[in-house]
Length: 387
Image 1 (cartoon, rainbow, N blue to C red):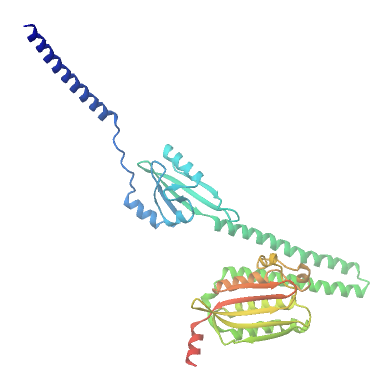
Image 2: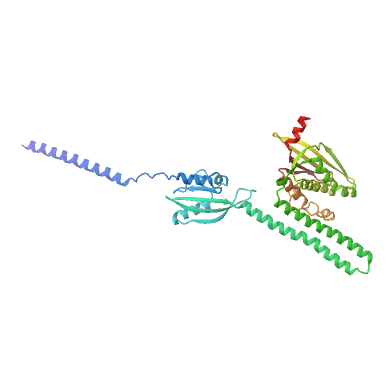
C-alpha cells in the first residue's frame, strides 16, 4: 500500500513538473514577443518627389529619418553637398536635424571651402520638412553672381582712379598755364602737356565705353564671313602712323586667305590693339611680325594670328595678369604712350565672344608673342578642296 502511494506521488509530481515547465516556457515566449520591437520599414521617397527633384536646376536632396541621403540630383553631387548616402557639409546637416525636430523650413547662406588654392563656394540653402521624417534640401550656387558683383565694384573703383589721374593733371597744367601767362615758351610747353593728357583722357573714356558695349553686345547676332587678310589690312592701317613714328618695321607672313565668322569691326579692334602694343613696347627701329597660320586640333580647324615683337618682354608673374582691366606691365611707358590698361582685356573679350582664345608667350629681354585663335569656317576648307 505504501509503495502505491509513493508511485502516485511520483506520478503527480511528474505531471506538476511538466505543467509548470510548459507554463514557464509559454510565458517566456510571450514576453519575448512583447519585448522584441517590430522591424522598422525602410524610408521610401515617393516617385513624384523623385521626378520633381530630377527636373530641378537647383541642387536637391531628399534626406531620410537617420540623416541618410535617399535621393539626390547630379547638381547636388557636383557641388559636393553629399558623398554617397551622407551629407558632408556640417552646417547643412545641422539644419536638417533642426528642421526635422521643429518641422519648420529654414533658409540660410553658407560658404564651403574646396581645398587649398581653390575658391570657396557660396551656397543659398533651403531646408523643408517633407513628412514621414523626411527632409528636402535645395541649394543654389551664388558664387558666379558674387564674382560678377565683385568685378563690377572693382571696375567702378578702377575707373574712378584712372579718370582722376588725367583730370588732375589737366587741372594742374591749367593752373601752370595761368601762372606762366607772361612766359610764351612755358605756355607752349604746358599747353602741349595738356593736349597729351586730354588725348589720354579721351582714349580712356572711349575704351571704357567700348568695353561696356562689348559686354552688353553679342556680335554673333550680326556675324558675317570675313577674310583674315581684310581684317589685317584694317588693323595695320590704324597702326601704320605709330610704326612710322617709331621707325618700327611691320612684316606680314603666312596664308591670309582664311575665312572666319564674326563682327569685322571688333576683330579689327582686337588685332589693332595687339599690333599697337607690340609697337609701343618695342625699341625704335625694331621689327614686329604678324603671322597667320592654320591649326588642326583634334579634327577642329582654327586660324591663328600671331603678333611677335623683340621688345622688353613680360615676366612670368605679369603674364598671369596682363589681361586684367587697367593692368600695365610698364606703367611709365604706358602713360607716355597714352595706354589705358584696357587694350588686352578688350582683346580677350572679343576673342571669347567669337568662340576663340588669346594667349601669350614671352621672355624678359627677348620679346613677346600674342596669338589670337579663331574657329575656321568650313567654306575655307571647301574652297581649298575644290581648287
